[in-house]
Amino acid sequence: MSSSSALLGSRAGGYPHRHLLGIEGLSPEDITLLLDLSQAYVEQNRAPDKKSNVLRGRTIINLFFENSTRTRTSFELAGKRLGGDVINMSAESSSVKKGETLIDTAMTLNAMLPDVLIVRHAESGAVKLLSEKVNCAVINAGDGTHEHPTQALLDALAIRRRLGRLIGLEVAICGDILHSRVARSNIHLLTAMGARVRVVGPPTLIPSSIERLGVRVFHNMLDGIRGCDIVMMLRLQTERMQGSFVPSVREYFHFFGLDRAKLAVAKPDALVMHPGPMNRGVEIDSELADDIDRSLIREQVEMGVAVRMACLDVLTRSLTSNAQAGS
Ligand code: NCD
Image 1 (spheres, protein in one colour):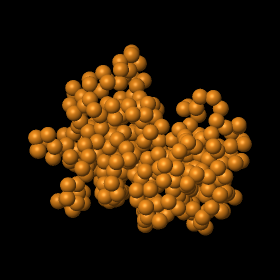
Image 2 (tube, rainbow, N blue to C red):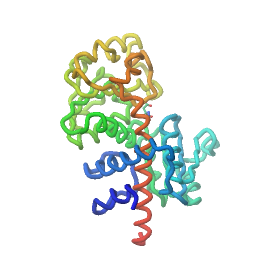
Image 3 (tube, protein in one colour):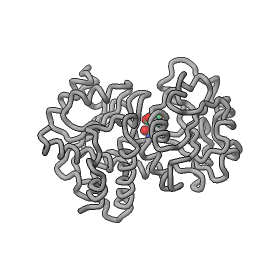
Image 4 (cartoon, rainbow, N blue to C red):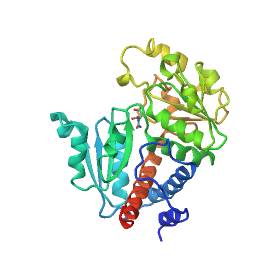
């Protein structure tokens, strides 16, 4: 039995969902299962022979209606390292350009009998809609400002590996919360796992009633990161902004950009994170982002491949058990 079979078998029922559309709705046990399995894949990825055949015979389609570098590449690597066939489609090169709708594209791909569709789309809710029309498992690789579940899982894995736990940690998520699916998925995951989450940013970039998700809101950066274990910075997502949300980039960095001077008010060994792509000098000081003692950014990217392997693994296993159960 492989280490992943042992892990999945050790929990009655394994991963109980057909898709991975968001962190909201996952239980702490689901999250722990995915993180533990990811941990095993970190070891596989660090070995000279990085390949296994968990996904042999499986077809995975990466369907990206929005640009991506790390997410798309790491899903592709994850599928290939598990021995699956991976196909990449971007909206640029597909019939979407010719006016085909999201659902028509999904139905066309569905007819080719993929096992997993990995979808990124600019509209919140689009990936869920698509999942209702297809027979295969669907992974949300980011839908609008809604959720980006694999990013939150990889962030949690990076934190857990470095600090040994999530429970009880004080985590500040800073910057453009309003447009960030990364923030929303992280809030769901971290609060579910017993961390305390603060969101920090100017009032224009914090959604109203975000407190309902169980976070504390700060509009002053120093107050927001004081005493934190983790300071997670977010990109200013100008492509999602209509109109002006910040006075100027220079002023934004002055008040909300993370540099060593501001980080000094967090815990002495506090760690810095960023999902990428970074705007160096806008939300984070360039030299701090590269400091291997304080920054988890490189590890976040590495963990991304392992987490996506774990997600593909569990979702294709539940396909097998659905087929065996005749559902
Ligand atoms: C994030 C995304 O696409 O939501 N990036 C990523 O997946 N690594 C965050 C961002 O684009 O700023």
